[in-house]
Length: 297
Length: 60
Picture 1 (spheres, rainbow over the protein chains, first blue to last red):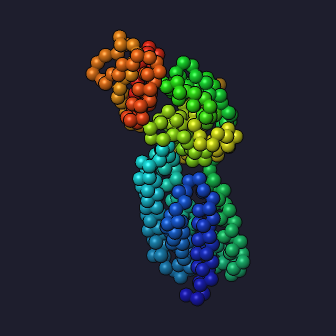
Picture 2: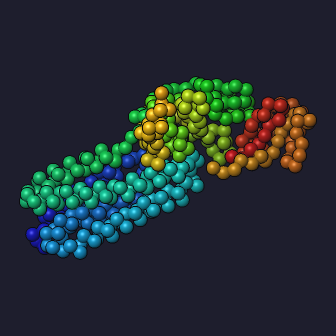
């Protein structure tokens, strides 16, 4: 046991630290309740333990131990279910729901993080086992943690589109952001309120891939949800007029977001929209197909 | 997405509406807006203007 003590210990330590690091980096997705932190740190610890015993197990010719990794896979799929279920259950209480796609994306991220923890733990325990130098092992652990951080970052709206401030205006009862129709607002008093307090942005996709990604309703709901999370909303259950809406220009493919934020600050709204993650499930790439490229010109 | 539901109509144009839905008649546009606001709050619906003097209260 003693000869592997350092190897396993370092692996577990670096893996758990990696999980803690990744918890910190997801302020926008995480509900932030302390029990959630405890749950995920504990699961991260288990993942780290699994990763760091893998190499010593093989060195001891305990090949059966590797089957534990399969068990781990099962376990972490459970993490995905857990996140999905709890976020879906909370969805009812959200004025502006996240949407199924966003929840699925978050759940998948939480699952994937555990695999990255296993990898980090495996790498740092291997480094110590092979070289026998704990400091090097810690260094490897840090490098893998940073790589995991980059891997998990994903793309954001700013990468695939240009976000610009739009102007709210009314054509009769029809609310518009620039030239994009949003919805019909019946009451004159509401129209005035929207003109004074509302904000609009227009998201111009950079290419055809971005356009089809942005047209996904789940992606649009995520944009509305993030904008509301960052700037707040004046919507209440009896004022559906203030519901943030994301609609597209059917001719150009541009997307318009309308919202009535608690804090009216267009720069903040543009920055918030630019940082909305591109959802895995919404991502489309027609330009990767031959037919898609023919249509592109 | 839940289904939309037309719950009431508030109108100043009696000829514009009819049928098996709650219809409220108003004398002036101000009265119409006031009734529509109250109904929208009570029914948690949204007011839409269809342009012929009738407001619809729709649940989204």
